[in-house]
Image 1 (cartoon, rainbow, N blue to C red):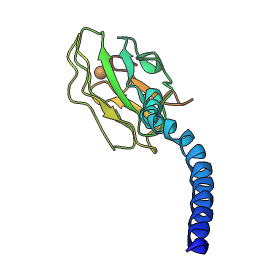
Image 2: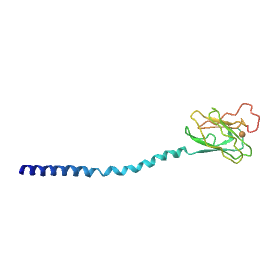
Image 3: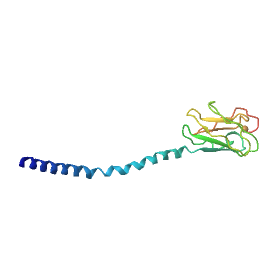
Image 4: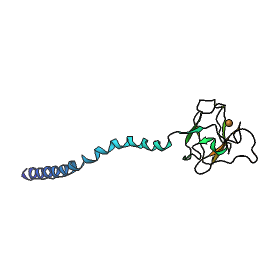
Length: 145
Ligand SMILES: [Cu+2]
């Protein structure tokens, strides 16, 4: 009987010591769970880029030209001119619809292979991305050359 009581006391003391040590260190990590909401922040550099249609010709037809984008970035074309324009990427991967004067095109994602674009109504209007300003057709003699 005496031996059993002494053993129980020894076990209880040992268990208390272990659980005390374990409980002390368990409280710290629980505060890190709120950091997950900050993962949406990197979307900020992907904000839509607005390229203005100026009404001038050649590489001056768009501003900024060249526009700085990242692959997959969404751009819109804002027509501040007095006639309709219609922009197509030179790699053929995407195009706007007709952009009426005073309106802005629907958002268009720019693929990794798209480096330049032009107006299909006025081929002299050219622009590009990331150092490329576009290439007006040789001997361009129409409007917006
Ligand atoms: Cu045009």
